[in-house]
Amino acid sequence: MADLLTPATLLCCLAICARLLSYRPAPGARHRPGIAWAAWLLIAATGGQALQILLLGQRAPVSGWQLILLLILAVAVYRARGNLAQLFEGR
Image (tube, rainbow, N blue to C red; front, side):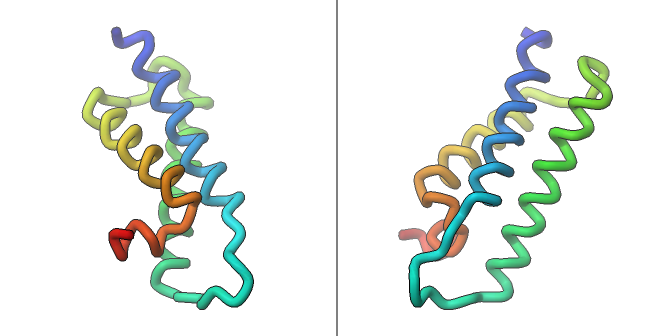
C-alpha cells in the first residue's frame, strides 16, 4: 500500500497544479485578488509537493490522509474547471 501512496500523491498534485495553471477566465470575468492569491498558493503548494516527491522518490513524506485530501481537492478543482471562485462561493 505504501508503494502506491507516493505515486498517487504525485499524480494528484500534478493534476491540481496543471488544472489551475491552465484556467482561462471567461470574457468579462472579474479579477479578484484574494481568489488569485489563493490559486497562486495552491499552485505553489501542489507544485512544491510534486517537486519534493520527484526529488526524494519513495523517501518523500506522504500520508494516506494527505492523499485523501488531495483527491477531494482534485475532484473539486476539476468540477469547477479550475475556477477557485466557484469553490469558495459554493456554486
